[in-house]
Length: 67
Image (cartoon, helix red, strand yellow):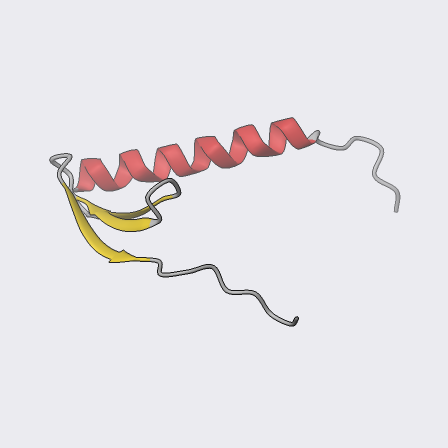
């Protein structure tokens, strides 16, 4: 069976971003805290439904395998 119609990489990225945004909005509406990673500060935050952020942990270093 051959697939003739493929979804583009840009569409995959758009759909993934939309799915994450919808899930965060859903958690906010239900009052469930969400866990978010900030790439710039390399810190993990717990974001409450009222918008407050609490730092949970910080990534110490980037590990590499091998030499």
